[in-house]
Image (tube, rainbow, N blue to C red; front, side, top):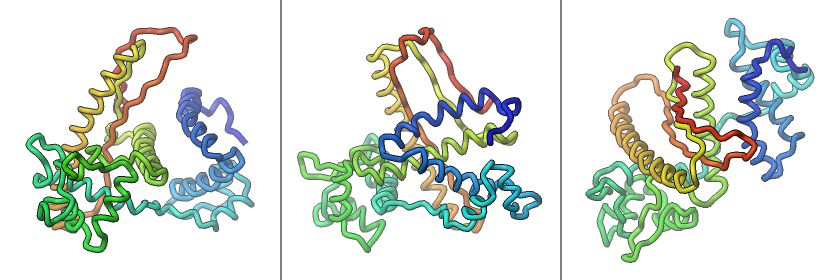
Length: 290
């Protein structure tokens, strides 16, 4: 049962259709059908409504949840007793790798004169603590550096240079291969971006940072120049935030104040403009904070 069209915001419906198209494209490519998605959405609707729509802090009744979600009470009762775990499954290569890359890209011992991750000798016998083996040992003594290196080579995170030193392929931990690893970041990054944008729409308090720069009527060469510039400046920002976050986390470990998590992300996207769409020269900075 859909709400009355007089209640729904046409702008919101249009935005949701636009937001959902890339996800539908992914699901079609990976064999997720409408019937499967429909059942998945029922589960999530009940989960979110049960958590976010309590009256007076008390759990909602099946009837109340049915009214909110439009889902039949029989399904509500079944889904409320199902095990919809909210625990993120983090691939081991991600949990271990993120800590290693964070250290490699922020600790001055592992940086060159340009503050870039320096190539590391493979073994402690070659470079002491400032080696890939030493880097891994500084984070965990329970796993051999060879295991980490083999996985990183498979994922495209690391490579060997002409001196057989281990080099970080990117300054941020984004696997080039490994579907489960990339899916983890897909879920994490898009969730937090969407959560920030949703919070800005629903709340009147201090908004989250959520901005973008948009141009159209650009040539392929211009888009390539802007993409390269975006990557360069974006990586500088990510490295700066990462370095300060490590310092703050070290200081925060000394007190017992409540804990929070944060995400700072950057993205760049381009696509061809459909011929039927009038081409207008635009220069827009979208600010969702205003």
